[in-house]
Length: 65
Image (cartoon, rainbow, N blue to C red; front, side, top):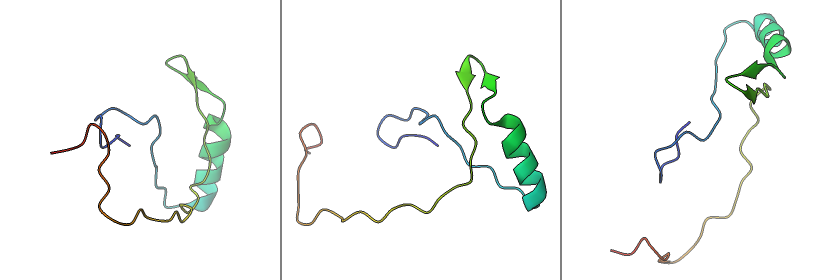
């Protein structure tokens, strides 16, 4: 996943597998493993929590046109 503002990696990804059993085996095998000096955290995706959307026409510093 890439950050929309910076274009840099957000440090996570989604993987889709067709078989739930194989997905469980992969999660167990990879969770906690180190890759390129970073420890992986592997888990099942959760639904995004609902957050209220800002209302009105807000302008944020640095994003004015």
